[in-house]
Image 1 (cartoon, rainbow, N blue to C red):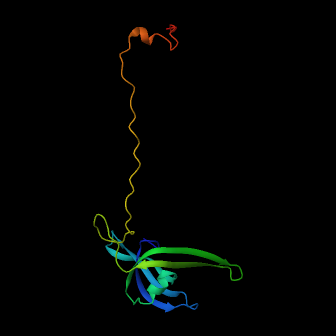
Image 2 (tube, rainbow, N blue to C red):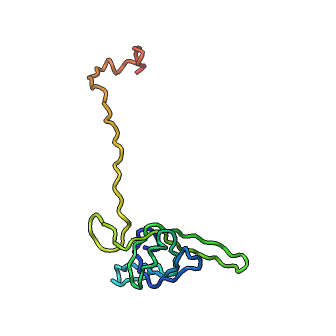
Image 3 (cartoon, rainbow, N blue to C red):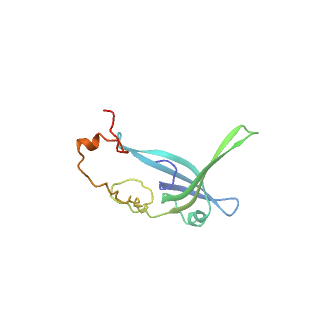
Length: 147
């Protein structure tokens, strides 16, 4: 599943951020391996709770489950240290599982209404008329065809 919108994550800790406008948290996202019937970590690491998620994250406790709604992944290269940094930011999440259409277990995206495809107006076919052999032997201008 990985870190993405719609993923279900377990929160392990939330720490206050240095700016006062964000919190840092440690989360993990797992999926069930159908071959071994065991749960495996797909993502585990630190994330930044910003925006609406900043206020929400202040009430989270260890082992709380969250469903990510809006998130972002960015990276930057530090030329001096010769190192790349990847930042995982959560802007919005919910603590209630999304409604699924069709049952099943596991993690899912927030459900969205299905849009109907525009329908094409029915094409009217030309009236069917019987053609004689003489009609088939004439060109559109009324002259005889060479065959």
